[in-house]
Image (tube, rainbow, N blue to C red; front, side):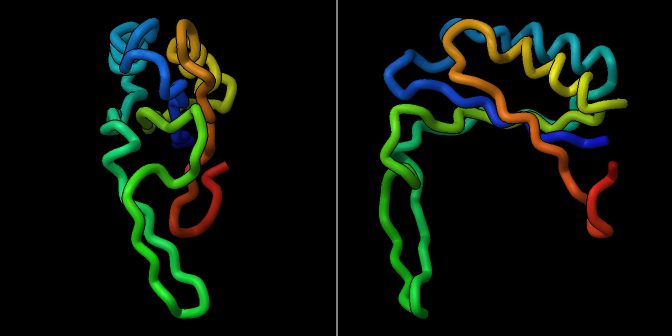
Length: 112
């Protein structure tokens, strides 16, 4: 089963501080579970696009004004949700605000 792990950080914390990114990559990579990993640029560099009533609004900056933001994402292919949660705990230590573990769907629906 494939899972998306969204890593949330506090915007006030230095990037990557306190994260066991290398440990996560080593364990998930050696187990053959890591499909991809992406670190995101600072949220201030993002662009939000919204369409309301046919009117397109494009604004710079983060989507929502908040102290937490998605800092990166990982796609893993694990035997179970429990294993995906186990891998997420490697990332959620230190200064991470949390890791969202979300099942991915294929074109036919949930793999589960």
